Amino acid sequence: MPKLVLAYSGGLDTTTAIKWLTIERGYEVVALNIDLGKSREQPVVESRGIAAGASKVRVIDAREDFIRYFAFPALAAGAVYQDAYPLATALARPLMAKLLVDVAHDEGATAVAHGCTGKGNDQVRFDVGIQTLDPALQIVAPTRENAMARDFQIEYLKQHGVDIPWAAKGPFSIDENVWGRSAEAGVLEDPWQEPPAEAYEWTRSPEDAPSEPAYLEIGYQHGLPVTLDGAEIAPLALVDRLNELGGIHGVGRIDHIEDRLVGIKSREIYEAPAAVILHTAHRALEGMTLTKQQIKLKKHVAQEYAELIYNGLWFSAHHQDIAAYVASTQRHVSGTIRVRLHRGHAAVVGRQAPESLYDRALATYDRGDTYDQSAAVGFINIWGLQTRVQARKQLLGELPEALKIAMPREDA
Ligand code: ARG
Image 1 (tube, rainbow, N blue to C red):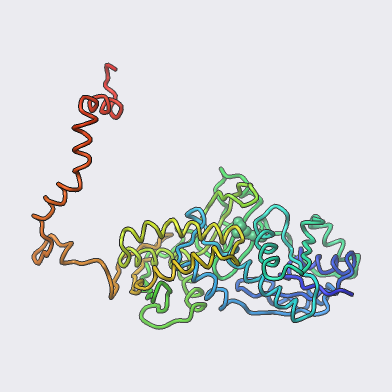
Image 2 (image 1 turned 180 degrees about the vertical axis):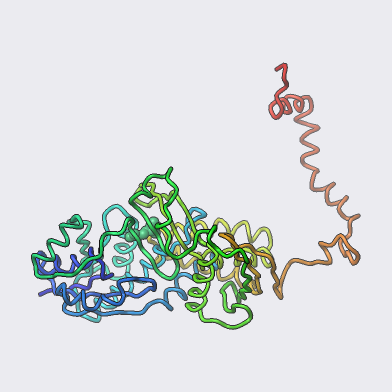
């Protein structure tokens, strides 16, 4: 029997996949459960996987690696897809692809499988990742090849002696890990409808959040968060804590019409309290420590980085190039940001950085001003030179016309 390693969540789709791959495709299936945090099925994966006919269930706790090597680099880069989505699912897939390939090698398997449909981005991220890391591995996607309705899956499992009491189908399609939660489908498919309360699970609604704000101080070192309220904290512990605190204060809800790589526009509801707080604070620290030219270019690079993550190109030279640029920009991005959480908002209310470019002696309107105001006159003389020359040589007589465009007269 050829061996296959399946990315196994413990849900109905991948549980059915174990049986299907065994019966219809003749594989010995090793179920690989990758723990990225927050999965409800975590406690039952082993028993379910075995019940469905896996020869073994392997569980890897990848939470710390996920935050350290995937989420935090994206944070330092400022990677947020379409200015909205902090990429929780998209960042998880390349790590899962890597672990699938590693375990396939370890098990002597010739194939790997995942439970993605043919309509989403995740199939692309898995397939491209796996093909890049080991082009010799066969990839099987049971749900894409042979989508079965939910009741049919339950029936199919029963027919083959797998009787698991499945909870009633939830109203949404959910994917979650420590960096964020996504909800799609059901009533969310109507973009005019406000998401119902049940669409949210990690965050309180801002109306129900405490009337008293909470204050946090997040310390960054070279663009990565390392302290909370003055005390050192490990990446995963920090993210867990901020998810909890942000959730209490209704921070991190995102309602987004998103452009999938496969051409579909889809309505996504995200909850990502920690990611939102950390991105907000990081951006504020860059405002203190980068020049305006650096901020401008980095914004473009961040967008490019978000797209390459979203589009499944994690294992690429393009990524390496961008990562080198980002690392260079973060050399002086160290300092502390004070954030106020209150009723759905994470507001930056204080910042300090040892290598800050903000110089109060230059900015002040009070005593102690070191800025030479008389020098502004010469600067403006040079700065406006080309515009003045152009107005005189080319635009004279045209200016009234130009003004008409900007301000149409009533009698025009
Ligand atoms: N739209 C998001 C993305 O493409 C979330 C996808 C959630 N995945 C899922 N299988 N439900 O990254």
